[in-house]
Image (cartoon, rainbow, N blue to C red; front, side, top):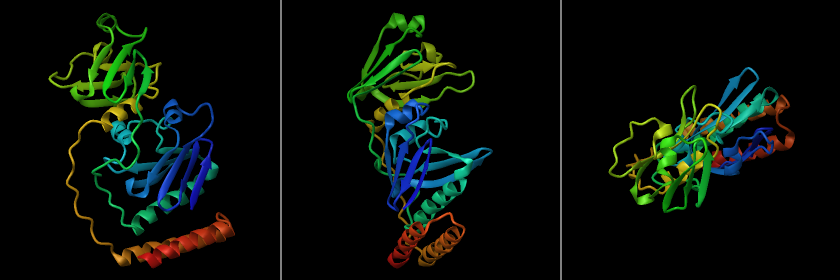
Amino acid sequence: MAEIAVPDGSWTFNGELLRIVPGSDKDIDELRRTLGEVRVPLEAIAGVAFEPARKGGHLRLRLRKGADALFDVAAGALGPPADPYRLAVPKARVGAAEYFADEIRDTLTVYQTPGGPCDGYLLPVPDVPISASAGDGAALFDGERVRLEWTGWASTEKEKAGPQEFPLSDVTGVEWKPQSGMGYGTLRFRIKGEAPSAKPPQKDLRCVSWGIQRFGGATALVAAAVLARLPREQPELPAAPPPVADDVHDAVLRRLAELGELHRSGVLTDEEFATAKQAMIRRLQES
């Protein structure tokens, strides 16, 4: 089992499941606190990388398309503080983060995990009812209807129109974008029979928007809850290639050599080395 725990949170991987827990510090982003613990099965993972920076770096997880509604609706646009699939790693823990990323990558290689789209969600979708507020409005979704209510930051046009409500059956799409530069962050709904609005987000009655000084909070979770309940086309998945025994054996043997080096250098304790070594030997036997 591989594990890394830092102030930003902890990631634990047992070879089949990646458990992501946000940190308990008050500065942890609202979206991550609202989402809480995330359990990611191995088959949902497309890749993982450690991205170095001057003061440490980030562990970053990439999921398969269609595996998780939140990952899909955010489309990689969640910033480091809010992204549950990105872990801020201090400089002193860089070695552990690199080892952690290698462990997941090697496991993906050993088990020949497919990287293409999924035909069904592999992570739980957000529960309903769910609501979130940001900027000029609040979005509420009970599983059957979406309701937008305006705050004191709303434009005169939105205030005059009053709250907006529409059944899920009328929703053809949902879009979420973070605030960037001088632009607005938006949670926007596309409605059956309506052409896409040409109005700016602060005047669009199908859109909650937030500006430079107001963050999107948990609005991405509302977007994910709606997206997960919309009909979606089932992709035709390519047949998985048969496992290549030589590649699997090479990956396991390479990992065993790396584990030995980490043990000799003191990164892994005797117990950690023995546990990891036994796990890799089992994978070699299974292949």
